[in-house]
Length: 407
DNA sequence: TCTGGGGTCCTAGGACCC
DNA sequence: TCTGGGGTCCTAGGACCC
Image (tube, rainbow, N blue to C red):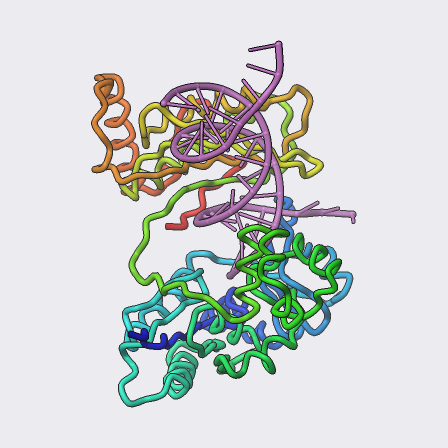
């Protein structure tokens, strides 16, 4: 029996961070709509994170692109206005969008803070997919005050490609019969999952457009690029069998990292940063009610070389002290005297639900004591705010890193 | 010149076992 | 002394996404 064709929408907020900040400012009585001027949302240059996070159409016309340094952006666009981002507000706008979309289907995958996939296969009734897309587009604009692009297709890949066509405030279809005219004509760099490392290899093979890629021999692509080769080849032909993952998924790993205001050399100072990061990460881990099996420490040197070491634990844990002790061991392995460290990161991986954990025979009094301690500290943090509770010997690093209340 | 932070997935090599 | 594979687990590093 043939399976019913899927009906997929991809919703993408236009210049999300910039649009949302524009709305917030107008709501606060500011007169200028920053969507209408040469503006970007940017990081903080004094914290050495001065990159473009989102740009207005006018800034884009000047050649400003996401990810470049504010310095570079200003060279192209001398009157550029830079505004700070507000993650809390973005989360709220993102939730508003999600709640509006729930009126159409509950099969929604939140692909990122500003993108959703909708599986409309069961919810269309007598209407067409395209009509629904226009209806959603209008409703979002009228009720939420920002615009979206919507891609309309029969799988996720094609819907995502379609939503990336002309912007803003547009609805585009990309059905199978439209692939040659709408997709194969595009530069191969536009294809989802082709990044700046793969591009040179493709150019060498004289592959310039997505159509060129689609003409390649499948086996050759697999031989040259492995799994990634197969995926690229399938995507170029519009093949994608993946499902819309609409159920809430637990994270597979949790990490925090920080670019330091100034490079650090002394191990003791790096350890203090690690402790602060460990507290942040394990706090989030415990909020998910999960345990970690792997601890990973990342360092970035001042010349942008990245290193990481990881270790699998004997017993899964969410305990601050346990994770920190391993983190210190890993730092010990990696630390080279006299190296200038720009970034420190800590993440936990191979997570499992707390109730799946086999209670270890070694779950002794000391461990129970530590868990209790975490619990008490977490409760205080819930009540009085994350930064209300602090460990001795860590004050300095907390001046360096302020916890970002993201969850 | 200056280059974020949070993720997921894949690969390759080494250890170890059968 | 010189020689196999296959499978799993672990680790370091890297590509890609938003």
